[in-house]
Length: 144
Ligand SMILES: [Zn+2]
Image (cartoon, rainbow, N blue to C red; front, side, top):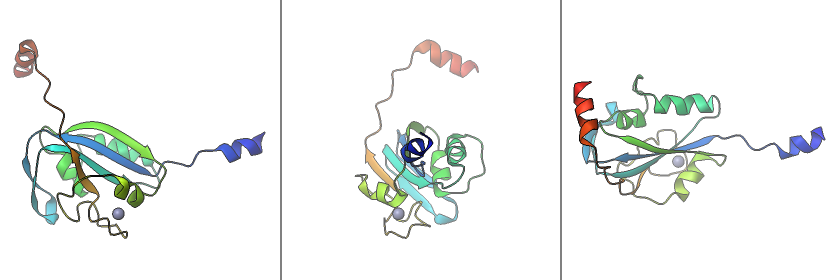
């Protein structure tokens, strides 16, 4: 019974994809990498962590952190909205290359890439339309 359980053990997650919306076009400074213009849209960033996988994802989702990776700078831009986090067992470059999309900034997030992906950030579509905001919510936001 233990053997069967061992066989059935799922492969651990090692690759993640951060799907997020940039509702408006924005110029973002990505540290020493440079300054780039990002068109509005839905983006997919593919990364991996062999250890502390969930901690890495929590870090990406955290608002307060030291900006270290290229993606940190973009996620810190105003009005960026996380849509979905995908967890996968396949190697990150394989996942990245199977994700259809357009490369906006060559080399973004691909410093450690040895598979010639071109970029680990892709623009995969349009951002979700803005939700109509209620006046009350606006007033509360201004008061805060
Ligand atoms: Zn790659």
